[in-house]
Length: 600
Image (cartoon, rainbow, N blue to C red; front, top):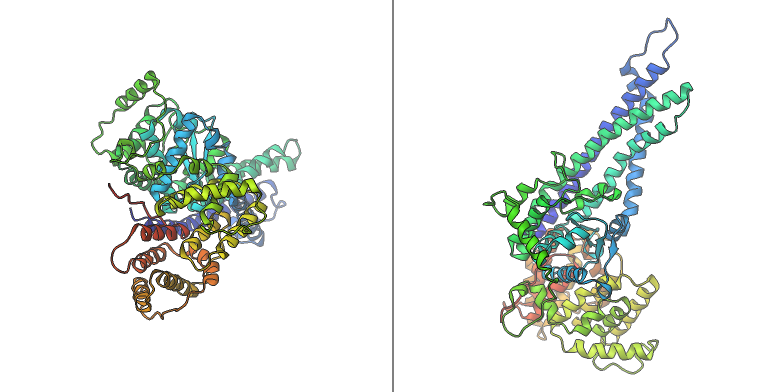
């Protein structure tokens, strides 16, 4: 799956969304003007003997212009207010629907299985592990991904999904949601929520006017009629909203299903999950009042009956896209589920690594990489305070002086040093896997704790300057701890990209000719044929500018990652350390690079 192309398509869909929004707003303004003028003429007719003003004259009057501007201002302000409410990212969406954040150290066996699957999928997809929320009161089979970017993404799962699906089916559903993260759908979906909030607010105004017009006066009657009219227009706005959702999200669901098959290499997992939805008495329903505005985020339709305005394609179409020869029967899948429940089999434990060929459940690269980590390190990544210590351990120098970070209490220092001893024994790939586990719990630190940790990481980097490995680790940890920076001016994007290639070439070779060969090989991949060799790298300037490359267009990210690949492996052979380095920069760019697991 070409995720860069899909991200570009998602950007183009944003333009389509703006066009549909503008069309819907214009229609609503025209209908509100028509309604208002009809009410004026009906309820306040001219004195006897005076001609009735034409409707066209009234629609072209200054009053109509002011009504139109007022309507436009209300819709835009409500949409902006909703967008500000969604600035909290995926967590804000999940918590608004009653989601409970799962903690590995307090999870039930079923919840731990879900957390294991999410961790495996994140590592296999080459992205950081997102927080996981459980909708405890929802018994339908459903899930969602929400956020502005992988930095603040979350995965949400209903109780029904947790209880009714086996591990393969759960992997299929989670893989579907990860494809939305990687395809760039999440930001588009949140924009859609904000846009529709403004359109649907008109019906809410109508309801308020109707409730506020109780009385027998003429003014009360006019308010009631206006309220009814706005309520009807609100229903029309709802139709507009549903049509926009359907236009934007339906095709993305087929794409996410196909991506899930690619991730898991197991078509029956997601296909069986869809079949269980078709056979379940709960279907994929979600009853929380806030779920309606988020319906396009979910794995399946949140209302049982599908229609031409549904946000998702029909179940049968989705299943046949995965299994073209499906016979249309749900019973075999349901019977398998019943047999599993009757046998009361416990949830599958987390897969364990073996020195030989991976077992049947370990075909997923993420599972193998996770299982290879020591349990003490994995446990440390699952709590905010110990995750903080683990972050320090990842950057702790081998020859650390006694006065390094003197503010650390003795027990904390001993814990960091003990963790660092285990970290030092890990391979480059295992260290990257450990880094991918940290974001959910580092993000739970308070702002002062994050600022203190960043200062400590800077001091650790200063103790071992001009070394590529520690510099990359610090850059990735800062990426987890800080909000997205402002984008670079377009004119400076090639300059910073080439500066990065220069640093990588300088660090990868001692001979200047080899350094230049590596640099120009990468520069040519960016079509920068007239690039100049940058010489000695400016570590501080690049530390400030590198995070801002996250705003590159998807196709420019593709070129930069390819340039990095060619630069670090200019001899044509990519070692494991070089592959990890490429993936680390891909994570900094929030670009998808799938893990390739070498076979024993």
